[in-house]
Image 1 (cartoon, rainbow, N blue to C red):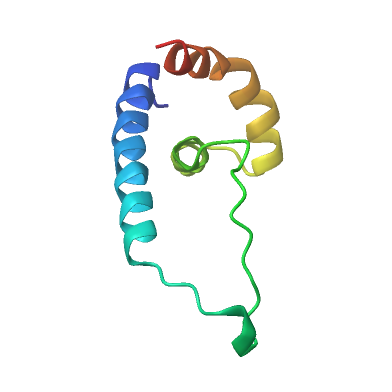
Image 2 (cartoon, rainbow, N blue to C red; image 1 turned 180 degrees about the horizontal axis):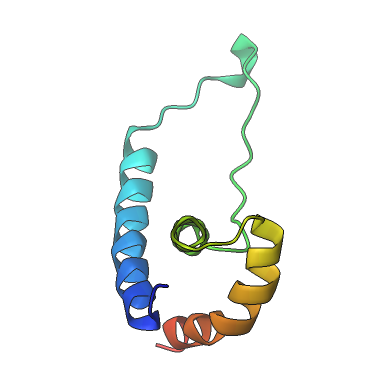
Length: 90
């Protein structure tokens, strides 16, 4: 099983990656004009950061859970909730 120190280290790496990725995407992403028949994409901010979603999925693949729902309810919400509080209190 992954230790909380390793989760913290991976989260920091993924958070930096996501920040750099978002900066590159906003710099290089060109949205086509609406009047040419393209749909407008919503640019709404999500409730959970991308790096947090990625670390949850990464830890899931290292674990031995068969079902993601059980993994999230019985491991993430109970054991890793304290990690989230440490990251966002800084």
